[in-house]
Length: 370
Image 1 (spheres, helix red, strand yellow):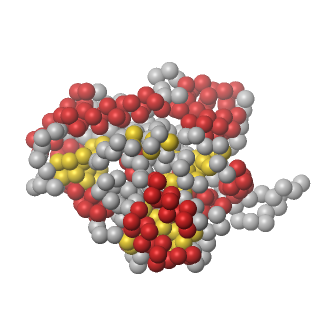
Image 2: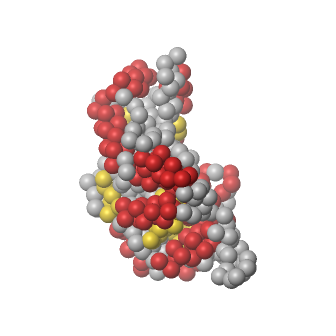
Image 3: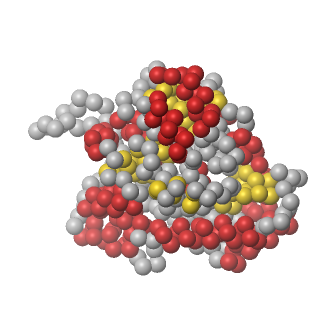
């Protein structure tokens, strides 16, 4: 059996930057939450995405949750969420006892359709307390019209940039455009802390509120006193050290992801009924995953099985939220764009350790199947 090709696995720096920061944490005995790595990682990441403030957390999901908490979203409130995404984008709405309403994508971006967003606002009006667009697979949502609509209604935007670190929209880093930006450092992301996330914002008070809730909402008192329900969401100093090292090679990882996407587009060009995720001149994506659409006789399950038979990992596109049993009964604005992308979509191996030989191995199987 040939070596396995992974979809997107952790990739530590060749220079050992991560080990340096981890060793420093051990040498100073700061292995628990808080410490110099956490503070520095927050500062360095915030600077990278051009935000003023950041709170390092255990996951991107926690970051969305605390953004909603900081905005006071709760029972009876509506949160407009992108339909085509991973469940972590929407689950925190349930954590705060609010109601998610799902907005379909458009084919131009594969992300939230501004026209449908406007329609949802017209229906729900003042009940809408937050909007969560997603930059799917590193593709930027069309943020200008989304922001214009949300600003008109006075509703904060929580950008789910979990998959798009290194992506820019009209020259601006994703995650820096809305009131809040959410980043993920899960093991399969473009850089990783093994598990972790970050909430960024230009609103320092809101970040301090999130930080307060992330450390069990402990009051400022000479003893343990709690007036609010808090959460154990802070990132450890060890994990933050990994993140600091990974941040140093982010540009390399983005360059390799883009190389992989360009390789697939070049080598698979001309195959009937096979198309790629959209390319827009205002978006410079990180191409976190290279994703194709199959609209002919070859179906996603068939191609995924053929790749797996050769020890190659791939996967389906996210199943839209309004089709998930857990969200049955939630309102949905759309015409099935996300469902079509799901039914026809395959995420190809996009691991930054792939060689040209690995990429050609994948392409040869696709050519044979299609």
